[in-house]
Image (cartoon, rainbow, N blue to C red; front, side):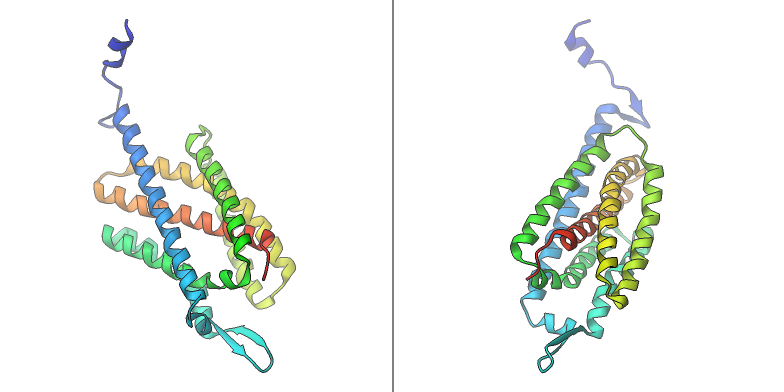
Length: 249
C-alpha cells in the first residue's frame, strides 16, 4: 500500500466525528480557551494599572497623613472579597445564562480582580513584577504543555489539589486579620506547588470536557469556564511567586 493510498483511507469515527475533525476541533477549542484567558489577563492588568494611578487607590485605603499609617477601607475589603463571591455566581451564570452572559461575567470578573490587585503596582517594583510575570508564564506554559500531552490521568491529583485550594483560601482569610508574615510566606510556598499542579490538571480536564460539548452553545460556555480556571491558576501562581520573589518599593 502506498503512502497516498494510506492517507486517503477513511479515518476512524469517534461519536460521529472523524479523528481528523476531532483533533482539529480540539485544537481550535483550546486556542479559544487560551485566547479568553489571555484577554482576561490584559483586562486585569489594565484595571490594576488604572486603579493604582488614579484617585481610586484612595478609595481602597484609609490614609492618615498625621500618623503616616495606612489601613484598608471598608470598600477595600469589599473589592478584595468580591472576586471570591463572583466565582460562586459564575457557576450559576454558566448553568442558566446565555453565552453572552457568561462572557460578560468573565470580563467583569477580570476587571474586578484587577481592581483588587491595584496594590501590587504600588507595593512592588516594576522590574520585579515583570521578572515574576516571565517566571510565571514559563512555569504556566510548561505545565500546560504537560497537561495537554500527558497520557497519565491527573484526576486523583486534581481532587487532592482542590482540597488544598480551600485550605489556602481559609488560611488567607485568617491571615488578613492576623497579619503574620510567617504564615503569609508559608501560604505562598504551598500555593506555588498547588497551582503549578492544578495548571496541568485543569488543562487536561478542559481537553477532556471538549468531548462532552453537545452543542455550539455548551462548547462556548465550556471554553469560557475553562479560561476562568486557567486564569485563576495563573493569577494565584503569579501572586504567590511575587510574594516570595518580588522586590518591595
